[in-house]
Length: 68
Image 1 (tube, rainbow, N blue to C red):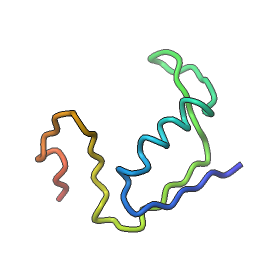
Image 2: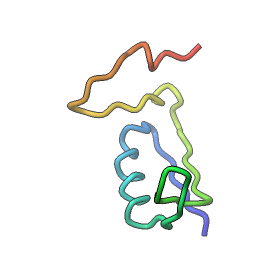
Image 3: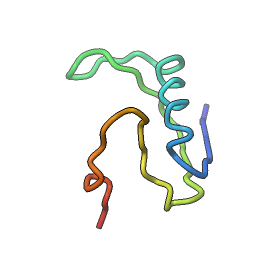
Image 4: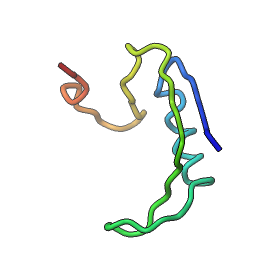
C-alpha cells in the first residue's frame, strides 16, 4: 500500500510522520539494532522554500540549515 502526504511546510507534518512510523511501521533488524520502517511512503513538499525542519524548544545551528 502506497502512502502519500502533500504538505506546504514540512515542519507541520514531521511530528505526524514520526508518530505514523512508530505506530504503523514494521519492526526490522538493522546493524545498529531493532528499528521501524515504512516502505513506499511519499512526501511531496508544495513549497520548497519551507523545507527546513525546526523543533521547538531545541537549539539549532542555523548554519547547518544553509544549503549551497
